[in-house]
Every structure is written in structure tokens, then in C-alpha cells.
Image (cartoon, rainbow, N blue to C red):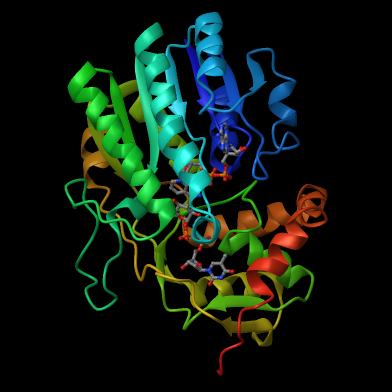
Length: 344
Ligand code: NAD
Ligand code: TDX
């Protein structure tokens, strides 16, 4: 079997590449990644030493490039992780999100139609469902929950999902979609909450918590996301969407305090700052379908996962120091320099 994994130089895609190489050693993996600010060849250094792995730098929205890759490689399964993935960046510059996340999906699926594949899998997100109120803990996102995106990022992911289902209905392209909750773990880019807080705390910098810090996210260790996608691409039913999550809801402020405890750093580092525009209040996934149909369950608890993650960032200083010493510094100044510090 030959897998084409897009966005494999990013956080979840790279974890998936390593999962597949380990668990399906006979399969070949071709990674296609544009290497935007979020793509990192240092992350793939281990995979590059494996003879079953190949890397091509290309843009998924580039029709000519995708055509050439499909013509030459003839992949059996396409797993599309490639995306602009950060909500805050989408609020600043929506356009690139529409290009990569919507047009890129369109281009990839056209290549799939032209050259024929066994499965096209779209890696989507729970953010397409919008948010849930904090005072209704009985409510969860189900696959049938209407799409109601809040940010340019989630609107672009929702648009791509609609397009994927349109290709299933219109062209009978064998597709599946997964919608996962917030991931954390190794190789997570430091613009996202958990790695940003770990790295700031290690440098004794302030930890910028948006607004009251009571927004809730449903956290899943990245490897558990990879096991779910692996099951869906091999055993999931065509035309189906699967929600992925482990019932692990935490308020942001609680997550930040856990990180500080793990690192032995004081809570005085926490600073409440201007809220994110349109900030979703709560995400919570109902994973009943993937459990019932494919037997999937997460295996890493949050307590264990956060310990492993903190240990990983302590052991891989060079990986993140290369990032924060580059263009990330001007990103940080732009995003956080003008935020007002809120009264406690
Ligand atoms: P990431 O930002 O860490 O990585 C994205 C990767 O895609 C990078 O390697 C980047 O270079 C590549 N890329 C971007 N534009 C490209 C283009 N035009 N052509 C080719 N490659 C391109 O993202 P991530 O957190 O690993 O997320 C991966 C996928 O999972 C995304 O589709 C995201 O929407 C989805 N997702 C993420 C989470 C999460 O918590 N991080 C949760 C649910 C779903
Ligand atoms: O500095 C920060 N301070 C803060 O309070 C950052 C970066 C975030 N936050 C808050 C905003 C969110 O409520 O923490 C929460 C998590 O923020 P992010 O890490 O930016 O993730 P989120 O916006 O929830 O989106 C993530 O999960 C769903 C991924 O980035 C998406 O790609 C995925 O689809």
C-alpha cells in the first residue's frame, strides 16, 4: 500500500508518519508538504532515514505539481493533513486559509478522481461545529451536529468538509472525514496553547491567557488521534464522518496551571490578556460512533500525556529553540505586543 500524507512536516502529520512507519512497516509513505512556517524538516529527520519514506516539497493547491506527483506515484490512500491551522493567524490573514484549506482540498480530490485512489481522507476539526455554552455540560458535538463555524480557520475547514461530501455524492470519490478535538504532544508548534505555555514558563516569561481563561477545550494526546485515523482509512466506511475525542475537557486556566506545576514554576507568571476575537467557549466531542464502529478508544490520560509532553519539550530544546529564535520572534511581538493585560 502506498500512502500519500500531506502536511507531514507539521505537528499531527509527522506524528502520523511515525505511527505508520512503526505499525505498517510494509507500506510506503510519500509526504507532500509546502514547508510553510509550520513545516519543519528537523521533525522528519528520523523518517528520512527510513527507506519506505519519501519527501516532496510541494503546495497542495498547485494543480500542476499535484498532477505530476499523482501521475508518477499512484498513491492508494491520500490523507490530507496539510492546512493553515492557527485560529489567531486566520483572524489576521484569512485569505491563505481559504487557498490552502479549501482550494488545496479541491486540487487534491481532483487528482484523486483523475488517477484513481482507494481512499481520500480529510483530516478535519471539531471547530467546524462552532462552540457549546459553558452552562450546558450535557451537550456534545455529534457527527449530525450542524456546521456553524466561528473563525476564518474553522469556516475554511468547514467549507472543505462540504466539498469532500459533495465529491462523494457527485463523483462517488471514496472519502472519509475525521473531526478531532484539540491535540497535544511532541512536535506541537509553539504558537499553540500548550507548547507556548511550556516554552514561556521555561524562559520565565509571562503566560498570556486570553480573557477569563474559562474557555474549555477537549484535549487528546496526538498518538491517540493517529490510531483513530489509521483505523478510519483502513476500516472506516466510505462517505462517513467520524468524531474523535476522549472526553477530556479542561478550562484553559486549569491547563496552564497544570503545565506550571509540572515545571515547578509559579502561578504568578500567568497574565490575563485581551481575548481572542470570536473566541469559541467550549468544545466537547461525542466519540460514540468511532468507538462503536471501529472499536477506537484513547489510551493516554491527560495526566500521563501532559507529563510526556513536558518531558519531550525538556529533552528537545534544540527543536524548539531553532523555531523561537527565527521568524517566530516577530510573530510573537505582533500577536502579543499590543494585547492589554487585564486586571486580575
Ligand atoms: P500544523 O500547522 O502543525 O502543520 C500543517 C502542515 O501543513 C505544515 O507542515 C505545513 O508546512 C503544511 N502546509 C501548509 N500549507 C500547505 C500547502 N499549501 N501545501 C502543502 N503543505 C502545506 O498543523 P497540525 O496541528 O498538525 O494540523 C494538521 C491537520 O489537523 C490540519 O488539517 C488541522 O486542521 C487538523 N486538526 C488539528 C488539530 C490540532 O489540535 N492541532 C485538531 C483537529 C484537527
Ligand atoms: O496564547 C494563547 N493564550 C490562550 O489563552 C493561545 C495561543 C491560546 N489561548 C487559548 C485559546 C483557546 O481557547 O487556548 C485555547 C487553545 O488555543 P489554541 O492552541 O490556539 O487552539 P484552538 O484555537 O483551540 O485550535 C486548535 O484545536 C483545533 C488547533 O490550533 C486547530 O488547528 C484545531 O482544529
